[in-house]
Image (tube, rainbow, N blue to C red; front, side, top):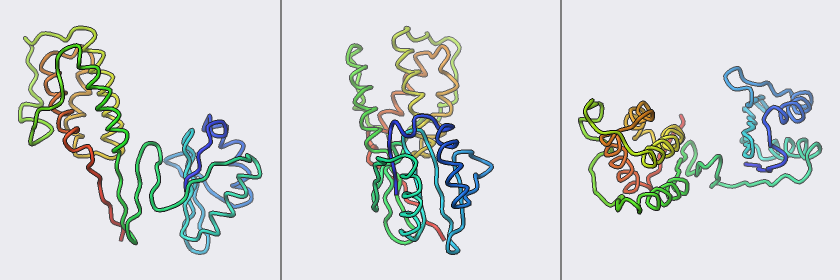
Length: 220
């Protein structure tokens, strides 16, 4: 189950004060130590989890009636929830698909498609594109830094910085295959040079080529 409401969840701390307290009081949910916006409770010998993330919030339990009860409690404090349920959900830009028992897929197809379109539009004034075909996201010289390489002009540097920031989110949310490349590129956002630009474009060509890729996960 996924619930979204822009006004309702405008600030996490507001949610925790207004929703967290009553939910914890009546349902004995306990916030986890590693994330103050996640709370768990064992219901019918199974874990019930609720998480608040600004405009997107998620609630889960194997028994749909438990989910119904928690939604009803929250609805009592914040009427007008928009609830999305099913085997295919979009949460924080992540496309989650529940395939079979213990197996689900995670993708960022829509987000990455939009990112590619934005970058290709930004490249037009320079006569550049993302049509090159590379077998890997980076070459063996990825971590090589040449001190004599010219710096990028300001507008290109801005493009580099903007899209590397997007890539950091992408690698953490659903594309671990690009993490080594993005990790290096993120160390070069201050004063990127033409060599960094080539590495960045190579990665984006790879991402365009594999934009429909999804990761499958299994649980024991």
